[in-house]
Amino acid sequence: MAGHSAFKNIMHKKGRKDAARAKMFAKLAREITVAAKSGMPDPDKNPRLRLAVQAARAENMPKDNIERAIKKAVGGDTETYEEIRYEGYAAGGVAVIAEALTDNRNRTGGAVRAVFTKHGGNLAATGSVAHMFQHVGEIRFKPDAGSADTVLEAAIEAGADDAVSDDTGHLVTCSFDSLGTIAAALEEKLGEPQSVKAVWKPNLTTDVDEDNAQAIMKLIAALEDDDDVQNVFANFEVSEEVLSKLTAA
Image 1 (tube, rainbow, N blue to C red):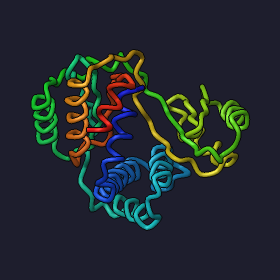
Image 2: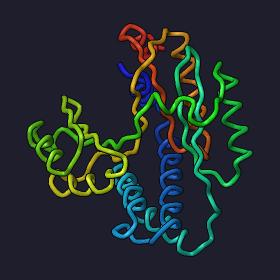
Image 3: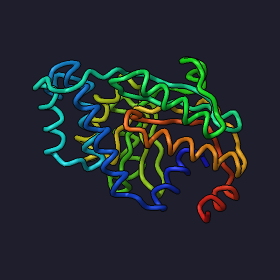
């Protein structure tokens, strides 16, 4: 099982949902504000803003929160945020990418480096691990969005690269550049997506044992807990045996 997906499932089961949800909404709002400030405050005329709003809606972020984040950019009373991608290695040689929006590069860089060091990893130069990933778009739908054939047909017509379905739902993959357009086209045919995200998808993965998996999970959790870090991706795999032990821990 893909390590990062397994990690997400474990973290959800362990609670702290309200606090995690509030933090997620804050990060979504920051992305909306930055997107609105970088172009037109109209999602129909600003592809990045449209994607940010789609992602927020998919996470059930209240409409008032979305509108407030856009108005914050229009009012000009927001900080100037810089987009930074941090890359490094976690325990077991696992590659990690962390995306951040920060108004203080030194603060965020120091915090990210400290997290890597504390949890047995090391921060590397930008570009050192990105070649192990593909930057793609992922659009998830619940099982009731349609049959596997219906979703696949809609995905092909929208210009997506792939669609995979199982008991948990449907996952449509597309190029990063066309994510907003394809998500909008699919929403017209399949309804509201469960999530709309730009992700770094591993080209290759690293198998890790229980000890390294624990260290990696702690590193990812610490990075995601940082207010400036928007997204974290890693390329590790865990066996079903290790996964069961982590779940029971």
